[in-house]
Amino acid sequence: MSDSLPFLLVLLLVPLVGSVVVWLLPRTAEQLAKLVALATSLLTVVVMAATATAFDPNGARFQLTWSRPWIASFGVDFALGVDGIALVLIALVAVLVPSVILASWHEETPAGRSPKTFFALLLLLEVFMVGVFAVTDVFVFYVFFEAMLVPMYFLIGAFGGPRRQYAAMKFFLYSLLGGLLMLAAVIGLYVVSASQLGHGTFAFSQLVGMPIDADTEKLLFLGFFVAFAIKAPLVPFHTWLPDAGAEAPAGGAALLVGVLDKVGTFGFLRYCLPLFPNASRYFAPAVIVLAVVGVLYAALLAMGQRDMKRLVAYTSVAHFGFIGLGIFAFTTQSMSGSVFYMINHGLATGALFLVAGMLISRGRSREISDYGGVAKTQPLLGGAFLLAGLASLALPGMSTFISEFLVLVGTFSRHRVYGVVATVGIILAALYILLMYQRMFHGPAQERAAGWLDMSAREAWAVAPLLALIVVLGVYPKPVLDVIRPAVNATMNDVHQRDPAPTVAVQTGATK
Image (cartoon, rainbow, N blue to C red; front, side):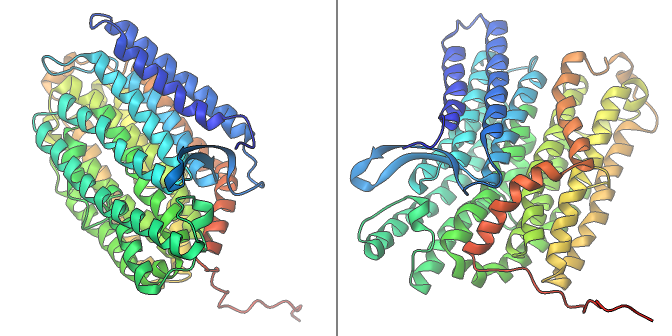
């Protein structure tokens, strides 16, 4: 069944067809493969714009729905539909992929690896990233959740840095472990639905609000939560990310940290809270502690890193602590801030990884100490890195500031101590970002940097849309927040939570 044109289906088919075309091109047609990949990603942006236009923020919770039976005997439908949260995350995918393709245009590939395979994998990854946000059937979500591992595994393992095979295997094993736990929980959820509803189902709309025994609900929650916590990643499930982020090619790292990790925090909002509301409230205090620890612990580790890509990866662990804190604080402000944080983190960290990749391609090193005074000879690269870094530390005027502010204000209204402690992460973020920038772009210029070219037009086009969105959404976030807020309100209702009442009396009478 469908209530509109199949926009979401088209969003899946466009990059899928593009990936197949790129894969079938002759090995020698490298330039054509890049052009096809770029054209496909830009066409996806156009389709995404049409999809966003068709979405009504004040309409039904799930819109643009499309469904066909897939495994009828088990009640599995290939069902698509988006709420405001899913819509903005799909938009993030559509924006990032063309930037990654442009930034990776001259990506050096290890011997024996074909560049066209690299771009085909990027488009295939885009299919799975769109799908994981767009499906409304729990089983199909699991399929897309696991399928994302395949192209990312090969992007890291075949096209990454010196320790790429170790990093790819670590990423795969951690994600596979989480996926197996989720699979057990998905099966358990199906069994419970058969006993409660009289028929087994994976349809999200039928599972929400379904009564579940308290102990069973806690076990099912944990199955989903651990899988999402690994994917996010939250401390202590984070140890795979610094290796994967450092060894992945810059474009792959931008998508890994900018989008794939958001599947974890999206899963908290879409599945953990609505399907298991009582268990979510029960485990919320523990999750909040993990989130706050992650903010501080990852920030301290980031300050000690010598590898610029590992440093950026650790900053992401800290940012995901803020996102997790906002989700489980259970206030409209904090939850809206967390969703907005997902978008802004994807833009800022994606830009940081892409600019870092441009520097590494020139300096042939990831070590921060091998750079210095770069801003004197490459001012455009220095400016782009500074702007992305300022966004990462949530400078006022940047979009990340709005999201971080909403998370902390919303958290403070319900959990004052955790809100205050988490603000220390803001100070640490300023330290690790500004220290990295100072060491790499100021001070005595490296002699070998004298011959480096500044940012090319292609590289500028790769990062300019991301940086422009960071500034625009920092000044005027209302359009995105208006899309997010109805879905947040629905999630708050699912988990049976309301914003805390004001604790300060408001004087309404006139004073004399």
